[in-house]
Image 1 (cartoon, rainbow, N blue to C red):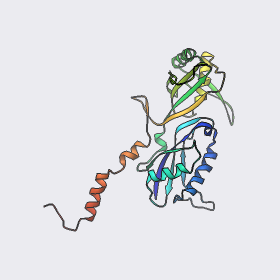
Image 2: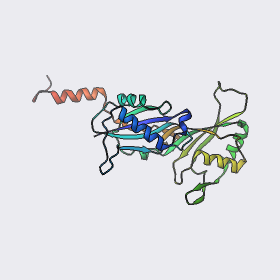
Image 3: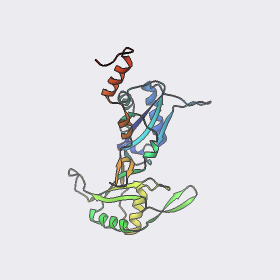
Length: 260
């Protein structure tokens, strides 16, 4: 059995795709690409696909991850291309590696998010961000299955700042862009919770819903404050071409052969 880890996106209008909608589209792509999938046992076998920390419906993402199990070995890049060609535009398979380490989900400890606030002056957002960052705790409320839940949105935020808008962006109306790094904690703190926190500490209320995109997801490095690529350990564990050739030479050398 071979395991392949994939990174995929949710772009444009496809950000409104639910996780279940993506699952259906991906399983169709597996069939169209004739991927030799491993299946679960039982009365209703299903392909062995493990999804990790999917983004909320309505948010874009450049860093969603899943893992599939195969019954036959395949080249990860060839498989990525086949699957990407079978997916709708916007749900793009952009990276693939063979799983050579354990614990992918354990390496998804933080996310980098970008929020575009149309109709809001950047200086107003800077003032709100300063108040949020200076606060020891920022309590927000969210509707849950068991009623309204109150929790601290500040503790999970490792970094929150205003960044410059792209130079080619139209300037007819004000626009502020927020970049935030959020640790994955329980209860989960989402970008909209941070917006609720900004409203609580500085009465910041964008006139239109924020456009939210996850830019990265991975292991949070406390020293540098960055989020690292969760697929990097699998790439580093892959044998190099030189090692593979050397290993093949040793395997095929005649018994008793030695150096001259």
